Length: 66
Image (spheres, rainbow, N blue to C red):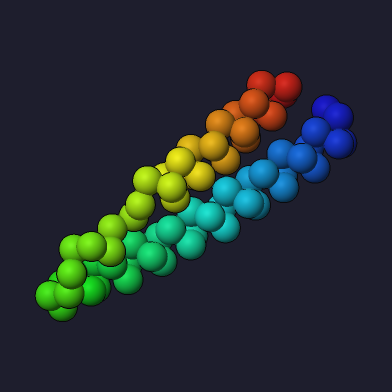
């Protein structure tokens, strides 16, 4: 395996993990607010979903090389 490709893959996985962790924290916060009766307006927006989709697609492109 190419060391450069492994480094790229590792970086993409770390970025994706950080994003997923952040989104999980936001979702937990939203659920807590909803449980406490606050507004439904604070839902995960389409931009964040698109960002996650793009990161996953980028990682899948790198994985094709392996």
